[in-house]
Image (cartoon, rainbow, N blue to C red; front, side):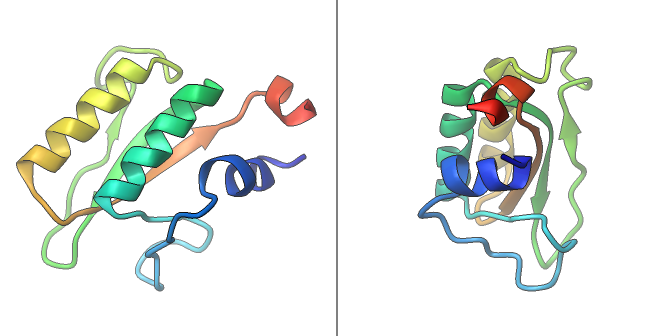
Length: 108
């Protein structure tokens, strides 16, 4: 199984991709509530999350990475805390992330 197939089947299922052309092709952006589900599912499967990128029409927002927090990409503490900080700072943002699915999970 490819990483994109795994993400579609196990992480993004039943969630709405809100990237209507403003972001790179293949990068899925989710509402605040859907992105919370994405993070919960990523934690469940033990995925690596390297960056979280918030987006809004009105202003640019800087992406945050696990390195900024001096945590491993597989540590849910960094991405859960960063997501909470971002959504507290500003409501109504869309969110994307960069993921890595382990070879072990892909082999299942």
